[in-house]
Length: 268
Image (cartoon, rainbow, N blue to C red):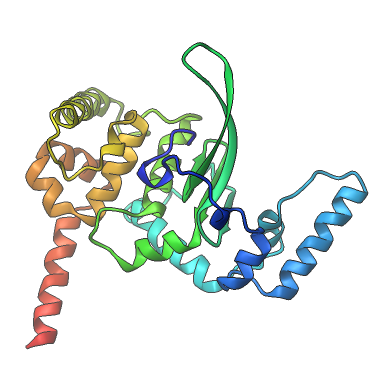
């Protein structure tokens, strides 16, 4: 998504993010030095022979130099969104690109008077309608380690993938029954408007302020909270929780009850 969430917000690009990708990859254990050298060699060979230029990260991905830990950690979190959908596996998705940490993108945008302005942004994840998800590995690990903070970049970006199955994201993913759209639109529209009003009044919410950016980001942020803080969402936004529970075909409140019983039994 070109609209970024709170962890994709504008930052001043410092030297920390200007290091060469290969150095960061090796330092953080994303790839070995030999793999990076071989990837650089392929990049140079492509350029010399006039082939399409590929980023080092893309070459590492295409060569399969991604650890099993990465595959399993990302897949386990992405599959949460598909638990009761045995015939649905992100049909448009064809590539997951993993960077060691936050990455910089350079884009152009039009300012208030219509002029194109160059901008750089530091991101931790992106999802594109053509079937690509880009993730920061350090943030993937953080999302897996802290399961109840309402922040999970994998859930966020893969919620976008569900929303983008129709070719674009607007906060209205494909529902099982067409007759459910009016209620979905009404509930999420009301909740979206209410969040914007609360933010203007400086009131707090279980939903991150980034959810008020647009309907697509609202759906993605709500998905994070739904899976990670179901009790809070069900208490503050029962109608919204109900819509998401019907869409995802799961009730995370039950998971937390089971986890709570298991922890109690283990401690006795």
